[in-house]
Every structure is written in structure tokens, then in C-alpha cells.
Image (cartoon, rainbow, N blue to C red; front, side, top):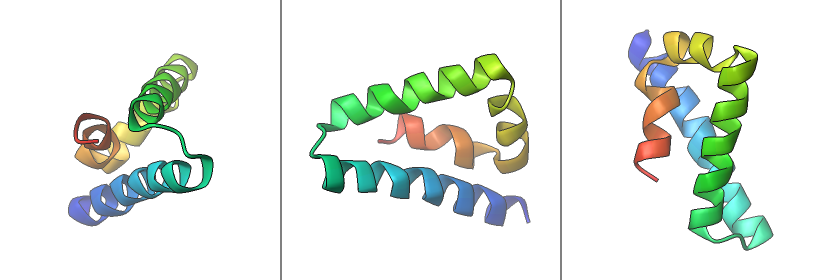
Length: 66
């Protein structure tokens, strides 16, 4: 079940980044900064840590592999 959770959460993050690339014509660097800043805000609010506990690498690897 851990693999399935990592797969769908990581896939959702990557799909959102792909939608941003296609619909807004943003450059990949700006999308990467957006993802990192969103992660920082979610971490400050306290949402990102439970997401990492739930999805494992699915929530953290899309930032590294983009």
C-alpha cells in the first residue's frame, strides 16, 4: 500500500507541474521554484510533514527529479 500511495501522490504532483508547463508557458525553472516555495509554505503551515509520512518518497522525489 505504501507504493501505491507514493505512486498516486507523486503522479499528482508531476501532473500538476505538467499542466503548469502546458497551460501557462512557464519555464521549467520557474515551475521548480513554485514547487519548492509551495513545499516551504506547506511545511511552515504543518501540512507537508504528514503528507511525506503518508506518501513517502512520492511527496519528496518529484522536487528532486524534475
